Picture 1: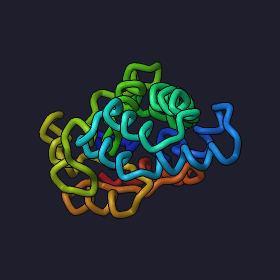
Picture 2: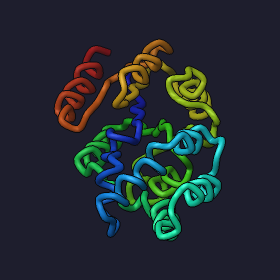
Picture 3: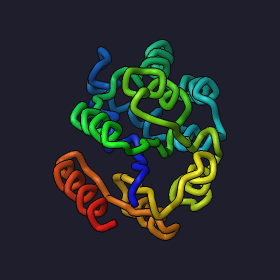
Picture 4: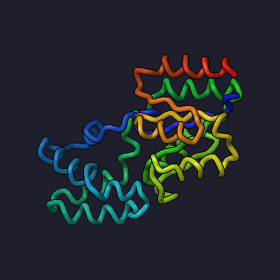
Length: 203
């Protein structure tokens, strides 16, 4: 019986697009591209997700790489970018329906803790019964151990749990552990709803 539905963050509950995030700041096209490359496309960005660098440590590195005129802007972006993402309200509305139907909702995301804490403390966070995040665990999907952390921490059975992610390798890893998996993009929301209804009826 399907009891638990687990959501990734990026491109599942919100649109992770560095260009759209940077559009919220007053930047020239040249500075936009430089900041995107220096921050969002950097190896340090991945190290934040891996839990090997804090956001503050990474910010110091980014500042050193940038011209002085962009130092304050880089600091501002690193502090405020979580508030600039576009959340998928339709997904959160569906979560409320799922919870009303008795499902438990969890998060499992490769993310730094600044964004994870921002989301979980926002109005959107009230939809989740718990979450596991890569930076805190120093584990990244599709490593099986991060899925096992989620299952163990919240006493979930793999066969009763569905994992939704935008990357096939991540849903495949969940399936290898006996979970259901659905590779998602926002235009597949109706298909996802049908899938949850279908596997619920099969049991």
